[in-house]
Length: 88
Image (spheres, rainbow, N blue to C red):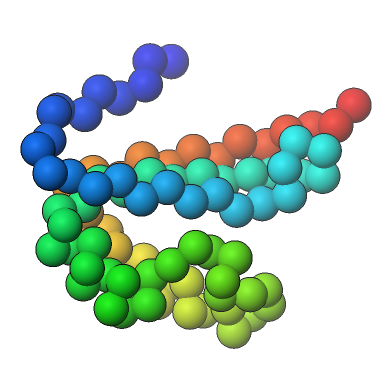
């Protein structure tokens, strides 16, 4: 399928993150978020950072989940991709 096309945005900042085990060990999730510079600053102040900095386990998962609505409410665009690689 064709990738969605985003309109040209002046001064947009893109945040990209990935999480998962990679092609040899399991599923991979990637997301890109387009933000205004102001929204990027607001999210940084709320603690949005690389997913690995949250650590692992249930507590880290809850921290990340709590930020989802904050991110999506400020985002100009969100693109996520879940790809499951199967090692043969």
